[in-house]
Image (spheres, helix red, strand yellow):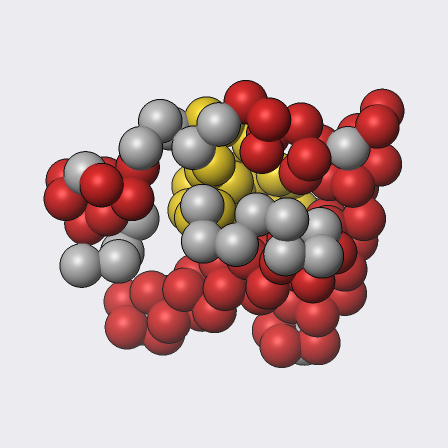
Length: 115
Protein backbone atom coordinates (compact mmCIF):
# COMPACT_ATOMS: atom_id res chain seq x y z
CA UNK A 1 0.00 0.00 0.00
CA UNK A 2 1.58 3.27 -1.18
CA UNK A 3 0.09 5.39 1.62
CA UNK A 4 1.44 3.05 4.32
CA UNK A 5 4.89 3.02 2.70
CA UNK A 6 4.94 6.83 2.56
CA UNK A 7 3.82 7.09 6.18
CA UNK A 8 6.42 4.55 7.35
CA UNK A 9 9.19 6.36 5.45
CA UNK A 10 8.12 9.68 6.99
CA UNK A 11 8.03 8.18 10.48
CA UNK A 12 11.46 6.57 10.03
CA UNK A 13 12.92 9.89 8.82
CA UNK A 14 11.43 11.67 11.84
CA UNK A 15 12.82 9.05 14.25
CA UNK A 16 16.31 9.53 12.79
CA UNK A 17 15.92 13.32 12.98
CA UNK A 18 14.78 13.10 16.61
CA UNK A 19 17.80 10.93 17.52
CA UNK A 20 20.10 13.49 15.90
CA UNK A 21 18.53 16.26 17.98
CA UNK A 22 18.68 14.37 21.26
CA UNK A 23 22.17 12.91 20.83
CA UNK A 24 23.84 16.08 19.54
CA UNK A 25 22.21 17.99 22.39
CA UNK A 26 20.51 20.30 19.89
CA UNK A 27 23.80 21.72 18.57
CA UNK A 28 22.09 21.45 15.17
CA UNK A 29 18.64 22.92 15.89
CA UNK A 30 16.73 23.23 12.61
CA UNK A 31 19.45 22.74 10.05
CA UNK A 32 18.95 19.02 9.61
CA UNK A 33 16.67 17.05 7.30
CA UNK A 34 16.45 13.31 6.71
CA UNK A 35 15.48 11.62 3.46
CA UNK A 36 14.92 7.87 3.23
CA UNK A 37 16.56 6.92 -0.08
CA UNK A 38 16.18 3.14 0.01
CA UNK A 39 13.58 0.89 1.59
CA UNK A 40 13.99 -2.77 0.76
CA UNK A 41 11.89 -5.42 2.44
CA UNK A 42 13.73 -8.71 2.62
CA UNK A 43 12.59 -12.03 4.03
CA UNK A 44 13.84 -11.40 7.56
CA UNK A 45 14.53 -7.66 7.72
CA UNK A 46 14.06 -4.22 6.18
CA UNK A 47 17.09 -2.46 4.72
CA UNK A 48 16.91 1.32 5.02
CA UNK A 49 19.34 3.87 3.62
CA UNK A 50 18.90 7.50 4.57
CA UNK A 51 20.63 10.77 3.82
CA UNK A 52 21.03 13.31 6.59
CA UNK A 53 21.25 16.82 5.13
CA UNK A 54 22.90 19.74 6.93
CA UNK A 55 23.76 23.24 5.76
CA UNK A 56 27.42 23.45 6.81
CA UNK A 57 30.55 21.27 6.93
CA UNK A 58 30.86 22.01 10.66
CA UNK A 59 27.38 20.51 11.23
CA UNK A 60 28.39 17.45 9.23
CA UNK A 61 31.37 17.04 11.55
CA UNK A 62 29.16 17.25 14.64
CA UNK A 63 26.81 14.54 13.32
CA UNK A 64 29.62 12.22 12.26
CA UNK A 65 31.57 12.80 15.47
CA UNK A 66 35.06 11.66 16.33
CA UNK A 67 35.87 8.56 14.25
CA UNK A 68 32.19 8.25 13.33
CA UNK A 69 31.10 7.66 16.94
CA UNK A 70 28.15 10.06 16.89
CA UNK A 71 26.80 8.77 13.57
CA UNK A 72 27.09 5.21 14.90
CA UNK A 73 25.18 6.17 18.07
CA UNK A 74 22.47 7.87 15.98
CA UNK A 75 22.21 4.75 13.81
CA UNK A 76 21.94 2.36 16.76
CA UNK A 77 19.34 4.47 18.62
CA UNK A 78 17.34 4.94 15.41
CA UNK A 79 17.48 1.25 14.51
CA UNK A 80 16.26 0.18 17.94
CA UNK A 81 13.22 2.48 17.80
CA UNK A 82 12.45 1.67 14.16
CA UNK A 83 12.57 -2.08 14.89
CA UNK A 84 10.00 -1.51 17.64
CA UNK A 85 7.80 0.53 15.31
CA UNK A 86 7.94 -1.90 12.38
CA UNK A 87 8.13 -5.06 14.51
CA UNK A 88 10.96 -6.53 12.43
CA UNK A 89 14.74 -6.45 12.25
CA UNK A 90 16.16 -3.40 10.50
CA UNK A 91 19.51 -2.73 8.87
CA UNK A 92 20.09 1.01 8.60
CA UNK A 93 22.79 2.91 6.75
CA UNK A 94 23.15 6.66 7.23
CA UNK A 95 24.99 9.17 5.04
CA UNK A 96 25.63 12.80 5.99
CA UNK A 97 25.61 15.36 3.17
CA UNK A 98 25.99 19.12 3.07
CA UNK A 99 23.24 20.88 1.12
CA UNK A 100 24.03 24.56 1.53
CA UNK A 101 21.03 26.73 2.46
CA UNK A 102 18.57 23.88 1.87
CA UNK A 103 15.99 25.49 4.17
CA UNK A 104 15.81 28.57 1.91
CA UNK A 105 15.22 26.66 -1.33
CA UNK A 106 11.60 25.81 -2.08
CA UNK A 107 12.52 22.98 -4.47
CA UNK A 108 14.72 21.31 -1.89
CA UNK A 109 12.10 21.73 0.83
CA UNK A 110 9.54 20.07 -1.43
CA UNK A 111 11.96 17.23 -2.29
CA UNK A 112 12.47 16.54 1.40
CA UNK A 113 8.73 16.61 2.12
CA UNK A 114 8.55 19.91 4.00
CA UNK A 115 6.16 21.72 1.61
